[in-house]
Image (cartoon, rainbow, N blue to C red):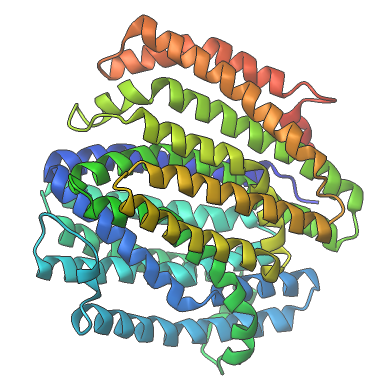
Length: 497
């Protein structure tokens, strides 16, 4: 069986690239554009992300079908399904872009969001450019599943890393030339198009026997796909609302530009924690389901038990470090232009830590093509997100929405764990308490070490932050060692399973 080592390596590489990109460009955008233009950029990015829902979840069903064909060694069926998917998205992309253009320029959906600096024309053109980049990311997900079908899940993750690198180069050129949000939006779309071209080239080169699979053919029966795929819309639909409803609400509140900028900075930091924990869970979820389809129940339980503790430990370690050092980090990061909000950071970190036991369970259900079990949870969470915004707006308390969103995510996570346990015996609910134990223990030591080091050094520049991190690293590394003390080393045994 494939080792998890390439998966974790690929995930670590991707997260480092994402962190480097976000760390560099948030500060650069604030410096080049100013706080108000940056806030408008965040709002437009949030609005554009909803265009991916035009896929109605077909990308997930198609990707899972490709992996299933490979497991059954049905080479002819795999080639047929790849060809059908290629044809489907050759049709989908132009149609979806046309729908987006009509929505933006005819029905003026851009006017539904509050902006503070850019003109209406720039707003609409930027929204369309960003929408194009998100829509081009849809077939990229399906193409990534081809790597997984060939037993190279890590290669599918690497193609995302390539996209991040291309984005980074394009955005760096725009900001160096002091381009505005519109130019940067066009750069995003160009980077996405180049990523699609590169992945197609790489797949043809790496798997010559699949070269003919990318020729056009009769598209798959769309209605049959939609009968299953609509259940997968709940997940990205809920994610879009959870991530973006606070942005829209804060943008319309008093002092909206400042609130959006502070929230975006805080969410970017904590988002790295969420991405790392959830992406590791997603990668390991693929291996668990591969073992499940091979009737290897012992390996399923062993990997799940160790992986959920790993995810909890990572959430605690990074979450504690963010709580202890986010203030000086944000001040240095934005060169003092944006002040940290400890309440926002704490609320976002706690929400991730509370939800972390459900990350792996959700990944297992998603990979096993069990969307109906996730639908009720994600749909209710999306509804609660909207209700949270309404309540917070009525009470005129911008921070209240963060608390209400955290409560709704905790409820949804509990439901996911319950549903997953009903379907898979190896998802033991007792591991939830153990996961929280690892998360709390790691978080407490991490927070104490970073907060103490920060008070001692009082960093006000990058060198001070580096020194603070080194000083805090001694107990930080000791905590990693403690996390590894059950049976064999957690990390080593997980990698070898």
